[in-house]
Each structure stands twice: as C-alpha cells, then as structure tokens.
Length: 495
Image (cartoon, rainbow, N blue to C red):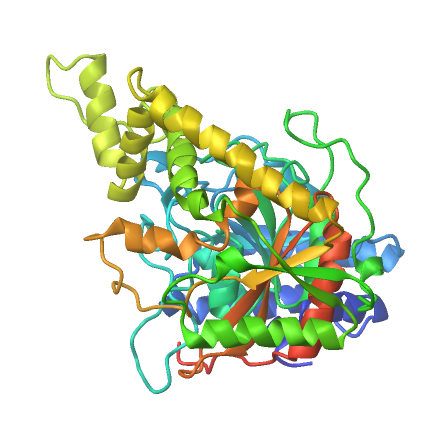
C-alpha cells in the first residue's frame, strides 16, 4: 500500500489487524511526509527514534492479539503536552530547554494504548492566539491555498500545527487543546474534525496551563469515526487532576449509528451576527436542512446572554493566565535572563519575563493582572464570573426543554492570510472565537465538522454543541452531518 500516511485511524487500525500493513511501515510513511513538509512548520520537535521504537513494540503487541484501537497508529502531540525527555515548550521562549521528567496523563494514556508519537506540534505561545502567529517557532502554515493565490494562510490557532499536520496527512491524527475554540476553529479552517469534550472529561495534568477553568484536551482527526476512537483513549478519571470527572468512558465508536431520527437540534437566533458572510449563513442553513433530512427536528432557540460571552471570556481567561503564568520566573526551570552586576531578584523576574514572553502573552497577562487587582476585581472579574453563570444557565434551560444538540457555524469566516489580521487591533483577532467561547464558558462538549468550501475553495466548518457528558450522542449527530455533507476535499500539495 502506498501513501499510508493518508489513511485515517479507523482504516489504519483495520489494516494493521488484518496484517496488510505494519505500524513500522505506517510510521515510516508519516516520518517521510513530515520531513518533506518543513514549509508547513507544523512539527517543531521531531522524535523519529521514539516513533520507530513504539511502532516496533506496537507490531509485537498486535501480533499477540491483545491490542487496543489506537495501538500502532502514528499521531502528533501538541507542544502544550509535557512529554518525558522531549522538549515541551508551549511554543514559548521562556520554556527554552525544558524537557520534563514526566508525561502528561493524556499523552501517557495514548502511549499506553500503543499510539506512536511522531513529534511535537506547533501552536500559539501558551495557546494564546487564533492564528498560530505567536509561536517562538514561527508561524504554522495551512496546507490550503486560496484559488491560484500563493499567499500563505493560517491553519487557525492555537492548535495550528495539529490542524496543519492532520490536513496535510503528516500524521493520522493529533492532540489539541481548546480554551476558547483552539481545537474547533483550526479544524474548521483546514477541513478536519475536532472535538472539545466536556470540561473534566480529559485530565489536564501535565498540560501547560493557560486558563484552568476553560482548558480541555481533545482529538483532531480526519473524520468523526476517528475522533470517537481517539477520544475514548484520551478520556478517563485522573486522581492527579482535581477537576477530572469520575465517570465511565463509553465506547464512542459503537455509538456511531448515524440514526438521529426524532433528535431535537436547536438553532440559536443570537448567533446570527451582523455582517456574517453570506457563505457562512448559507452553510448554516444547509447544515440544518441536512439534519432535518436525516430525521431530526429543527427548532429555533434563544441563548440570550451570548452577546456577553466574548467580553466575559476575555476577562476570565487572561485573569487565570496571569495567575498560572506567575510561575515562570527564571528560578527553577526554563530560560533565565542574563543579569547585570547588582541586579536583584526583582530585576531577574522582570528581565526574564520581558525576554521570555511574546507580545500577545504579555498583553493577556497584563489584562489579567489588571482585572484581578484590588480596585477592579469586582468591576471586572466577579462580574464576568456572574455572566458566565448566566451563559451556562442559558444552555441548561435549552437542554431542559428537550433540545439534544445545537447547530452553529464554527467560525465567522474561512481561513485568512498570515499577517492579514495584524497586531494593530487585537480585538479583530479575538472575534474569531465568537461562536466557540460560549462552549468553554459553559463547560460543554462541542465538535467542528467540515461541511463545505467557500468561493475561493477553502474549507468551512459547522459546530455542534452537546449536552454535558454526552459526547457519544454528540458524535453520532456529527456523524450524521458528516455523512450528509459528504466533504472529501483535500488541499492540493504545494509544499
């Protein structure tokens, strides 16, 4: 079989079980694709030795006939996950040279299941960004192009390297994290599937923290079935994470029947934004029609506090970031600035952070410190927390009224060019998260499914939001949408 790197997880798993292919062959195919794709800047720390060692072990395990679904499948790991003995920098200069002595729970679970780590993937610094332009490694580049235009496009952020690598077939799947849309927005931009599970479904232990009450890991895959397979391995209770839920993990793949007859799908009127491109509007309407044709009932719903979600998010997330990033001080690990004679500990902190953090991280830390300061805590942070409670209640009311899932656009536009949304107005960039942040604020599961192309031939995604802890049901609705949309477009190879 040629082009083994183009397989999805389910296809590759089935081929491995039949003996048509070995994990070593799959892994070598991916490693070659990675080496040929430096122009995408997706893989920033390659680990071929680890990959081949794990592939050989996986082949032996498969021969014995006792192998879980993920065994032998080559994947990429976002640079936010700590991986033992492998640089884990969160794409930041301040963690230069940091090689953890431990493994994050999620990457350990994948390794225990026999998954093969090909290397670490590019991302926005500390997961702060929507375009992968804040990384110390430089921009990740989308494999997609606009028509005949050679302009480099963003693969989205913060999981831009993961999105680019999966869309370009450098790996069969990848891990991502989602604090305000960082799995779903990049997945939509590059035409792949990405799911953010319910908050607490996947352990956060060993994942570099951005905003602890919002961060959640999830898979980025070539289709919905693959997302179900990988998510099951990533989930599970972890005593090391106090927010991890002690709930049984169902067999998500077994729940993919495609039967959604009688399901109620809500269409929130508040998501009809002023100035929404006609293409997004049409895609949304088409998605609703597809679900209706599949037997679902489409109902109009209201989520009245939606308009406050973005401002609340951009108070809460920076506040938590400011608290989490206080640990980067040059004392214990990572980079320490060169000090002049007579410099004390205060100067060391100041110089290390000024050198180590990029502009976007500095901006968010400063905003966060400001909203947590004595005079402004009630005016900003506490008010944002109250708004968050109202947003969560909006969803609870809708689900209590019998709605099974909510359909929205995943992004307000298709992918844009690198450098097109400059630092001049960071708010323009923040607006990219307009459809996704509510899901993080409410702790709900959300999945992005590719559903069409825009006039320039770029992918567009739809988002489905589900009830808490019902990822299996949500994935089944996504599976029905995927089948109806029939999205099979791939980027033309230019790299």
